[in-house]
Image (cartoon, rainbow, N blue to C red; front, side, top):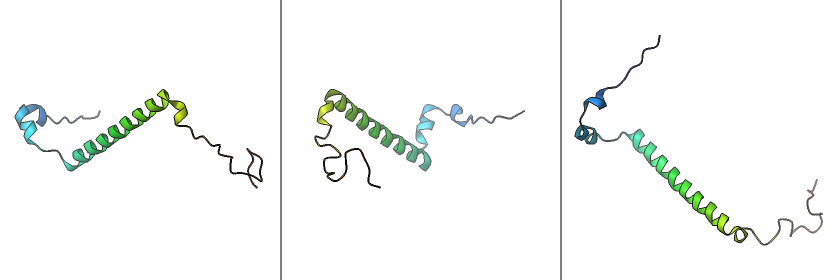
Length: 78
């Protein structure tokens, strides 16, 4: 049988007492990391919507094999 330990200190406090306690360094770091991830996710969503709205502007006009002269396109030098 496993014993479960509950911390009832937060439930016994009133709303003002909870707000009076500051966040720990780990909590601040976690909130900062989650915030940065949300900003990164937002930028990726905006970029994806721009690509969906105008897909041909994001593609380069040249081909990857344009600079290759001695080899056939699609083959690699051994």
